[in-house]
Image (cartoon, rainbow, N blue to C red):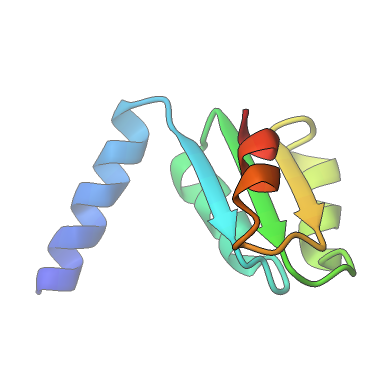
Length: 88
């Protein structure tokens, strides 16, 4: 029941405001795609330590969310300077 309330609150938040999302740890891109569909953010930045692009996310971003989702691979999440440059 508590998780249901949380989902309702977070869904309402996304629909009421214009939000930006930072996704750390893309893996195959499923959660980034989910977040985009659920919240329709103004902008989404995805970073991952792996250098190889996430095929599903690349396909989705180019077909469904062109210009809205920026993807950055080979980025260490402890590299504060690089992450700051990416999100600015």
